[in-house]
Length: 379
Ligand code: SF4
Image 1: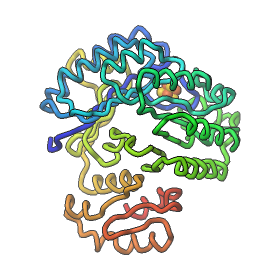
Image 2: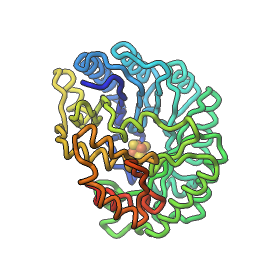
Image 3: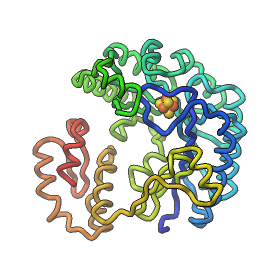
């Protein structure tokens, strides 16, 4: 392994109830597995620490699923293992994902004591009828109470996840959601357009003609509204879907987009180390059994060749406000960038999709909307 610092992702695949749009690796009704699962993750953390020679960890991200659903003593077990088996960078970022309705005084106090310093809360929308329609377990009031509680325990670094393009969501409802976020003291917002995946409840409803398709123009209008309003309120639009007040950019996610190394632990967790990408099985029982037998079951594993790595560098990096530095491709992969990219870049500049300063290339406002076209042109 040739990188000194890396990210560590821990997946908790349990939820109270499956949301109708969700295609993440998450399951409800598996309470009996919570403890054996966490014990398996602790063992995996030990195995990976020894395999990668006690790497230095700069960010820890406990994601899901709903990590805030399981008892705090299980979160403690996980973080205790992280501290026991890994070297932790001073000032590391330590995030937990939480859903409104699953946080309590005891949990937040415990998180603070465990060194968690960032909370990402799933709000999605501010209207209870919309929350109901997408199968969320909480109300808007629950979200406000969660933020207040987190702030009471000293959490300043809070993210809110919100979704636009929900079937039958009006522009006014989206405006109201954005206005609520900016009125609270929350320094990070992730805004994603709802994508209806086949293997979800919404996917099935769409197939049966029971779901009205979100209007594409309205979807774009909602996105522009978020971009403009959040910029006016001091948020930096640092990635296509992510906005942060100064000093609150999510370091863990930046590491993904910059192709930094990370270890993933838990069912369905992905890792990227030394140009190899691999993912654990997302089946909880198979995962636990695999760890017991000291033979982790993977759902995928592949090595990237030079062309794959360049492609990734472009499609991950171009999403960022900082853009990509083509000189990096020349340095790292020995490619003559003038010969390969000059004409393509000139064409994209003429079309108003990217701007270019020397070897630095980034999306314009128009390009943000047509990022896939830019990526296709470049790779
Ligand atoms: S809370 Fe998140 S992970 Fe769980 S079902 Fe809903 S969208 Fe999926």
